[in-house]
Length: 331
Figure: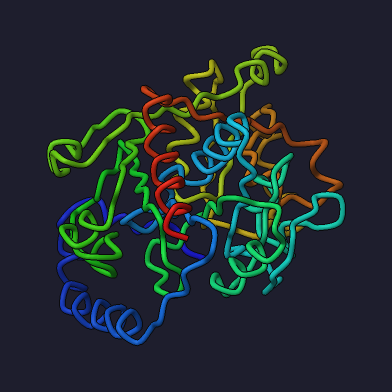
C-alpha cells in the first residue's frame, strides 16, 4: 500500500508529468469492464465506494448504514475484499479468531457486532451470502469499480477536505474514473466533513447529496488527562485523523504518517515508542490502525474511535430502503 501522493491535490509539474499515463490506465480499466459479465445476486447489493483513491470515510459509513438498516429490522451482511489481509475467502470474519493480517483491518473493525464476509472474488462472496438465506441485503464496502457484481444502488463517499483532488485520472491524479462518467453511476452522494473544495457545486442537481461528520469519542481524550500526544496513522488521509484528534481536545506534539493498511512491525512500534518517550507523550492512533497492532502493543497505545453522523439521516435511509424494495420486487 502507498501513501496518498502529494501531487494528487494540485495540478503541478509532478502530476503533469504523469498525465500521459492516465489514458493508458483508463483503457485497461475499460477493457476489464467490457470483458466482465456481472453477477446479479438474488438479494439487493448496495455498493459504497468513491471516485478517488485514498480514504474518504467509506468504512464508517458502511458501519453506520448497517446499524441503521438493522435497527429497521433488516438483516444486512457486509461484503469486503479484505485489503491488507491474506485470506482470499469467502470467509466470515470472527474477531475472536481472526486478526488484521488474515482478514484486513477494515473488515475486522466492521465485524464488531456485524456480519462481515471477506472475499477477493466479490461475485462469489455475494453468492455465499445469498445462499446462506439469512441476509436480505448486501453492503459492499468499496468495489465501485469492480465490474463483476451488479449493484442495486451505488453510493459515493467524498472527503470534504479533498474533494476530487486535482481532478485528473490516476496516476496523475486520484480519480479512478473520469468525473462525469463516475458521477453518472451514483444514486446518492455523501460529503464527509466540511466541503472545502466546492465539490457540492460540481455534483449533478438531480443527485441526492448528504453531509456527514465523523465524531471522535472525546472520552478517550478526557481519560488521557491532558497528556501530550504522539499521534500516528496509516490510513488514506492521516491529516483527517489528526484534525479529529485536535477537535476532540487532544494536544498533538508529534505526528507520524504511514501508508494505508501499513503492517506495523515490532521495530516500527519500538521506534514510535522511543519517539513518544523523547516528547514525553502518550501514543494514540485510529481504531483501524489499532486493529493492526500486535496484541502485546494494544495496551500501550490509546485508540480514538469515531462514529458517523449524517444530516438528514432518515431521508437517506428512506432512499436506500426504496432501492432495496425495488430490487427485491424485481427479484
